[in-house]
Every structure is written in C-alpha cells, then in structure tokens.
Length: 233
Image (tube, rainbow, N blue to C red; front, side, top):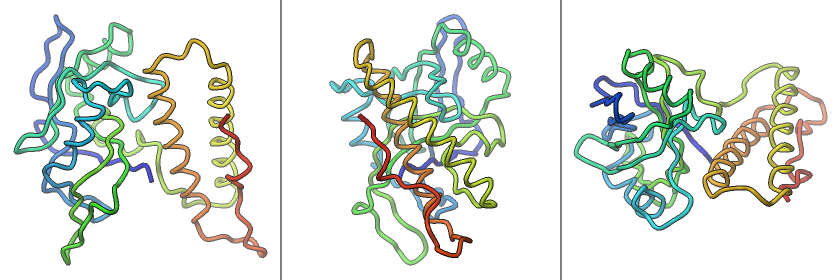
C-alpha cells in the first residue's frame, strides 16, 4: 500500500537561495517511530535513490511535490542522499508560479515541513518487540507541507458515514477515469508525466483499499465499489 509519513521536526530546511531558486533540507528522519509503529532505518532509501534518484539512469525520478499532490510538482531533486540524520535533499525549484510561490513561503517559514510518499517492502521489516524496523522502502516522492497540516495528505483511511464514503468512492472513480482517458491518448506524455500518473494511481489504489476494508453497515455486507470493474487501459 502507498503510504505517507510526515516529518514534523525542527530545522528541516537547511538553506534557501532565492537567486538560484534552490533549497536544501530533510524529507525524513531516522530513529522516529510513526503512528503506524514503524521506524525507518538507515539504508531504507538507498535502493530507491539508486534506481530513481536524481543521478540514476532511470526515467521515473523521485518527484518533488506540494502536499503529495501530483497536480502540483514544484521542482526537481538535484541531490538526494542519506546522512546520519535522515534523507537529505537539494532541489531546483520550478520557474512556474507555484514553484516560485512555494520557495517564498518556505523562506518565510509558512511551508516548513516535509513528508514522503512510499511503498512498504514488508519482507524487509522486522518487529523488535516494540516497533517495526523498516529496512527498505520504495520511495516515489517527497513533499512540502504547511506547518501542522494533516490535510495535505490525500491517502487517508475513510472513517465516516456511508454517505461520505459513497461520495469519496465517486471522487476516486472520477480521478481514475481522467487518468484512464489520458493514458489512452498515448502521445504527448513525457516520462515525468508518466511518473506522476504512477504516483497518482498508487494513491488512488491505497484510498480504495481503505474504503473496502472499512466495516460495512449494510445488511448484505457488500462493498461500496468494485475495483475489478475499473479498467486502466
């Protein structure tokens, strides 16, 4: 399942150069137990950096987003590596309005937290009696968040009334339909766009899984949606 983990510590941003439109900081920290009782261990990101990092040969690079939103890429990573603290980055911000505004908000301390979007590699985890030691993840993106904002993360468990859950399922289906139509066009899609679509599909899949695993209030216990009826091509 696609998962997000917020980094809500201090001193996440280490440097901003407004003239060069660059920023450096930390996307994640080691030795921190999250709400799912997971702790990312040193070395957890190395394989992803090797395969999808800025210096890798792969076309699907780790994305730099605003609030995990694939509609809002804000730049690209120039450097991405682990140190003794966590996952450190240097990024070149986009010349777009969103990129410039994001950098300005980061400089002013309004956007001052980070988060990562990744998939757990369950065969690389070990429970030590207190928490899960996560030794490897597949990292897809790093995001900038508003201070103290939990609402920027799109992948959440939907614990609500049947009406709201139905509304959420319709919204997810609409997102899936738009992506399907875009993929069917085929031409004009860059590697960067395919990368963003991959992240978006993983987010949608994770949200669907949250919906269908929630307890049902209906008498026949039927799921709200049927993923098997959704075509991606």
